[in-house]
Image 1 (cartoon, helix red, strand yellow):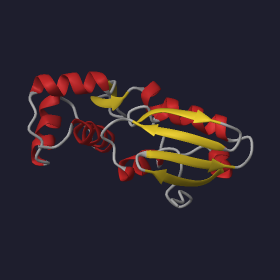
Image 2 (spheres, helix red, strand yellow):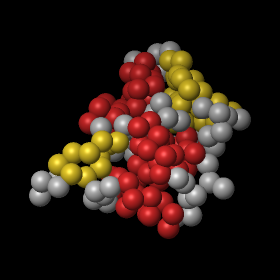
Image 3 (cartoon, helix red, strand yellow):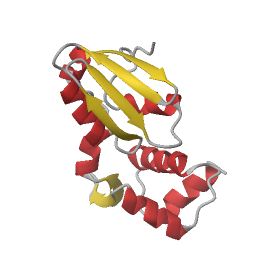
Length: 158
């Protein structure tokens, strides 16, 4: 059985990449990806993910991620994060991010607000961030979550 976090990530990806008009379409796509899910569970997941219906360019209503949530999950990283990030290293499940001096607090704040689905919290100094993942998230899942802020091309893992 697949985990809830896998299901939530799949739902987000499907909503972002398909024009879905109703839950039955989304449920069908999930079942094709081997998720055993009821309509009631899907409704709860959509509420948790803040998925709403909004008009597309043709005036049809489709599912989208709420603008406030979409801003948290933006795929275009802020340029200042690109300039400030240096490296990422793991010690068991904890991670340490090295930044240029003065960047750690801002990057930590963005991680806390934009990647809260995977990160329990951060502690920032001037050039170092301690990152505490939520229970059950692997190193690879944390790295993937961080790519919402930091492009893979500069996400150096030591």
